[in-house]
Amino acid sequence: MSPETVTVDYMEAGAGPVVVLIHASTSGARQWRLLMTDLEDRYHLIAVNMMGYGRTPAWAGPQPQTLDDHVRAIMPALPVGDQKIHLVGHSLGGAVAMMLAKQLGDRVEKLILLEPNPFYLLRDHGRDAAYAEIKAVSDDVRHKGDAGRWEEAAENFGDYWSRPGYWASLHDNLRASFIANLRNNYFEWEAVLDSDITLEGWRDALPDQTLVVSARDTTRPIIEIVELMREACPTWEYVELPEGGHMAPMSHPHLVNPIIAAYLDNGLDNGQRSSS
Image 1 (tube, rainbow, N blue to C red):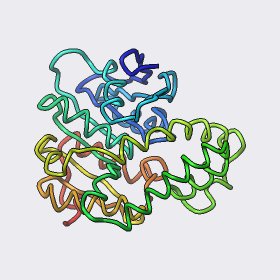
Image 2 (image 1 turned 60 degrees about the vertical axis):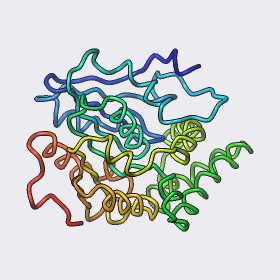
Image 3 (image 1 turned 90 degrees about the vertical axis):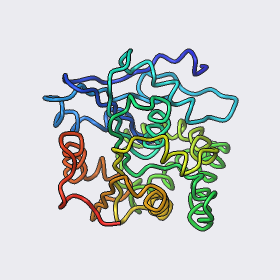
């Protein structure tokens, strides 16, 4: 597969202003089912499957994967024309949403980033310990994948991003699905560990109406990315969840989905905002 020939798979519901939903790595468009139910009475929702998920063709390389490749892959799911849209992205989907918003410019009205993961910013800003931590997670997937030890890689990956013991809690069919999706993740690291776009470049390119949502108990790399965003992009809005970790959009939708809905509808009230 080359990105130029991608046929993107997506879920669709509702009518109204367009909201494009971009899932996290090892997940898929179905992660947004509850949110789509909440919003379909007033929005046209398009939940895309990135490369290798659902029926969207997988990445085949051999060149390193980039955020541009992800954007090129999902672009056919977007409405044609200059219609305004909103974007919501989680984790890798957040980084992809950033690039999509950068390319679409004024066409994007609101951008909601849930625990976004442009990890290269840690390297570029001297956050050495946080960068080393996430690079070790990446290296573990790559090295174990190269050795065919996918179950070990999946256990380490799942326990890191969710909670210790997460892998042990999964039934066999869920483990098989997780491992299949982790084969996509093997290639995805290159897109978030290497880029030349600065924080100031993101600030200038992304919409003024940008919301960043993170959890207090998330991983160190994500905490420090959000710290960098707060410093460089103080006009954006920020919400810190009291719990839920990196996977809060799936594990704690009762906390995350009302924030997304409020921001899309009218903006946050003072009780929903977090102080900088």
